[in-house]
Length: 501
Figure 1 (tube, helix red, strand yellow):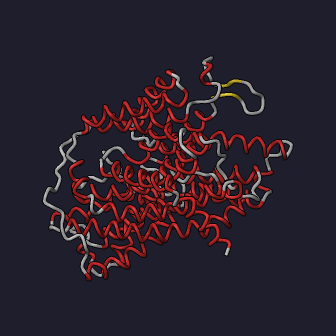
Figure 2 (tube, helix red, strand yellow; figure 1 turned 90 degrees about the vertical axis):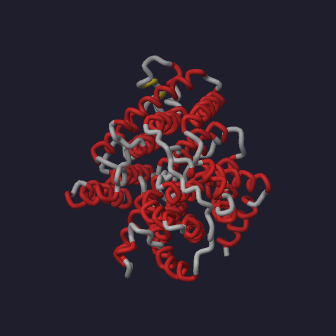
Figure 3 (spheres, one colour; figure 1 turned 135 degrees about the vertical axis):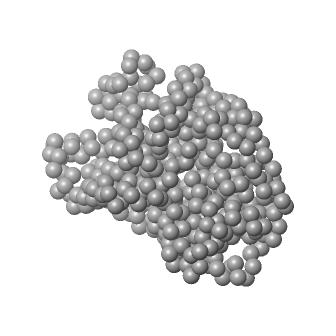
């Protein structure tokens, strides 16, 4: 009964005119950046962080959440029409979705992707509503030692699920942790690693780092690899799938939803891994495996359901524990901090309207996406013809204005330029920046809980292994780290995470 009353509060919050407007803005903007290859939800949310400072907390977080799962929808459009996924998680959709489009079934492929995503989004939103409250209750019983161990699990998992080399992912996490240490010591008040620059006293600017590493670096990479896009300009028709299509998509959608809901919670690249895992499962269970790679409906329905479910359930660790499951969730934590909200289990009890409003907005946003996306396909196709060299100056100006507006500090613009070059260098070295951002966000929290646990135990480091929950979490982290270095697992990772040039 309490669940229904909480959901009623959530829908009352999310259905207010202002929040509905920002939800609509979020899903439309998310679809747009998903459609335009090379921008991505992470870079866009990083660019929009400064704007959220002027908005109400609920409205800003609803808009950012809409951008995230809206991008999952939009990414499938480019994957199907031009064989260029707008989002990493849509890379699998391109395999069979584009083949369906080449056979004149682009409308059916887009509809299957949208309907599968809506079903997955609805189910996974329900799972968030069901599992978030009990997890919040458990999290309230955590002490400093448990939180430290939980963050270790999160960082180790982000290494295991990162693209490319495990060693490079480990190095990125370490770099992120070191950058997070810059500033004033939380207990002694002594400046550290500030290089004598007073702007570093409060630590590195989160917005500047995020916009630079994800926004500016992505712009530079896309300018380097700009190419002509071959868009299927034939009018997209027959959006309604046939009865046989519905029959063949039902199983993959259900299985993809289950896989995505489970893997989306994992720190790192859960939603991306879910799409690849769903495709592999569908290929193995299908009675028509020869169709995969040539326009299999299951190859579109399964991965699209999985990546959307993964996007929704990644909010569970954010809302319950204050732990980001991926770079977007790390940016959401940044948005909460900008609004003066301390991420963690106390959000549900102290700000129930915000907590349940975000959950309810997910369902409303998914409904908006289905209603709006398919009629606007013609518009998305036209936008795909815009050259990137026209878009990038607008994006650069938008980034600069947004970052400057937070503190009205020119120094932040220098920081954006510096981190943009750092991010571009990391991309050239094939170092994924996602673990770096997770390390940067979790670093201060990790240090605070480590030192607090040591103070409470009077310097006894065994407190991390004598407390049962903490010991179990550390054991899980150790096992994950051991497993990912096994030769067979490393080989599987290379098959699943294919880096794009």
